[in-house]
Image 1 (tube, rainbow, N blue to C red):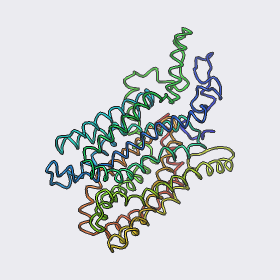
Image 2: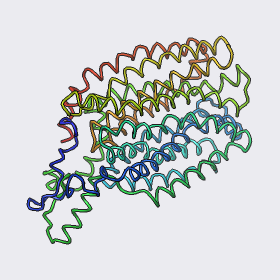
Image 3: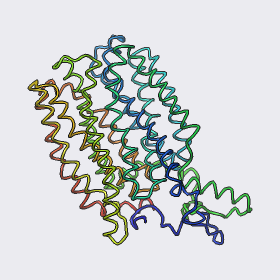
Image 4: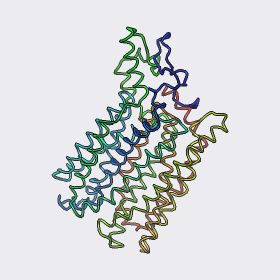
Length: 487
């Protein structure tokens, strides 16, 4: 059962009522409703999006170990421009979701995902053939724009296919890629660059993403219920010669507004959620800070293990295994317990689900994030055995994945029909932090060293520990304040 606070219309308003000119689902068990698809079909469709969602974030970091090779080829001496070769990809993540997410709500997930991933593949070819630093930075930003579609439309697919008590596991599967992909990237990127050259990193991306894009184009199907009912309405208008028929999802005042005003209004949904929904704004800033710290860590891991422990370019990527294992364990734990907690709390609440039931888990996971900065930073500073800093990265991965999965699922639960736009608001903010904060990384670590620089980040994340408590205590009040902007 949907929460009475949710932006999803009540079930009884979505059923067919041709007498009153309303086109909806035939009944609550209508097989055309994505929520009623067979389990295999649901997980297959989510699997398609999830694999693409692994490749796209993987592409964000796979080039990191090879940036020095490209800089040498281009005779580039600027450390900022060399860093931008990697992080410019995230600028695409800040632009793409702003229009791709609302377009997926206006025209459907299928066409937006297929078009954007095709764009993503095309500009990977541009990266492989880039003649200079500027071209590579621009092409990386463009691939990030195309690659951002899966991050937000995938959240929409989860909302389309799964009921609230099933979304924890679904978001756990879908959310694996955005965090594990950037960890897997440096592990493989170092070996590819060292043995085949940095341009082959992009050719590998062209092959893998091109194959997955082909599968998406062939096998993916539309899941947005609003689009499916709009198509059904158009068909019945023609068959029954009843132009007055209206989709059950259509707002009463929609017909009075021009198509242009409706389009502009919907296109601004991510920004309206970001600036008019206090809970989305606070969550977006919190996740952005944690994500920025993650990318600051990325800037040091390769240097620590190459310069301090004298590992080669390829082998140094293996240092990310500690972080990756943290992500994996955290993701599995979230997937196992999240839905069980929701089911139990819903029963205790008289059978009424409320999105805030997700939030206690964020408090638990947030406790682990600061540990890594002190452990990893001072073990690297003291040049202890190499296993110490690798293990030190584990708590950060564990805590971060739990925070992201919990808070993003909460946004999906709160704004079901606008789930893609809600996740877009978060993605834009976190990507901006992820792109800009690493630019300051080399200067900070040169000035303070690994110990105090990471301790500074540790104290920052300690200061942010009360935030999940704020979400839990005031989430419902803050969420309800924003509903009037999206009625």
